[in-house]
Amino acid sequence: MHNQNKGYASQEKKDLLQDNPIAAHAGGSWMSKHSQSGFGSSPLNQNAAARVKADNERIAKGMAANAKKAAEKKAKQDKERKERGTKSKARQILDAAKKTMTDKISKV
Image (tube, rainbow, N blue to C red):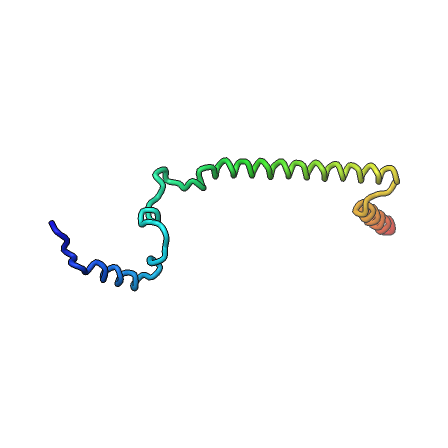
């Protein structure tokens, strides 16, 4: 069977490119633009679970280290406070409030 277009193919291509000008300069074949990977995921997502697990482990280690540092800092502050014989600001306020309340109750 011979070609039925008889010179109309170039006109058809020209018309299509005018209707969709982005196709004129877009790179790659039709298959590369419209096909999907045979495994159902892109190569970028193949190790996603491993990356998420590694990120979670890194975050957990960081949180544990921060908690440890905070506990050590508090223990150091408590030790220094005990050596100085002073109380924390919150404890001072509580003690003052207790004293005020007991004074008011004893006056009644």
